[in-house]
Image (cartoon, rainbow, N blue to C red; front, top):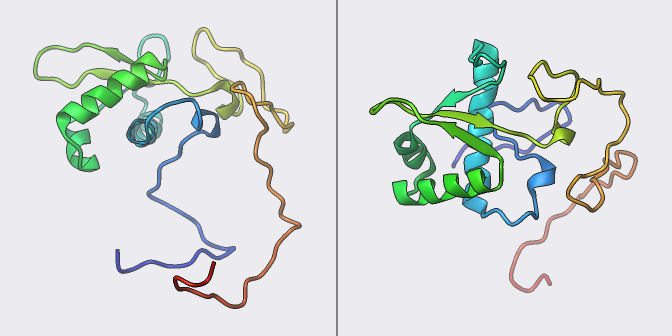
Length: 161
């Protein structure tokens, strides 16, 4: 990665994956979290292209072989991590015919959804701009914008501790 840049206050990011904060610290492996982030990212694409089932649930098609190649992992590792996500209730799969990728439904914590959901079985409460509490316990991170500090010098080396 040669062409790296510092972020500035006007930086707009693209081509990145997100992991909901409520999933940190619940016992998922790091590979499972990255796999989940890739599936969630693909789900956003499915939202924009209208890939929904008869119940209004968004789904993705993603061959496990393709995921393994993209993540630089073995197929066995991806299968194990997919099972981990299914066991955690974050992913549901619907088997398709032989040779076709399974339909994958990605679920997100309720605290990660803003606005109304049209999917059957979800609460339709609009976001009112209030802080929510974590369903996994602990405190939510806050953004302390008024506590900014500029670093003017950088020291690198083994004896800087």
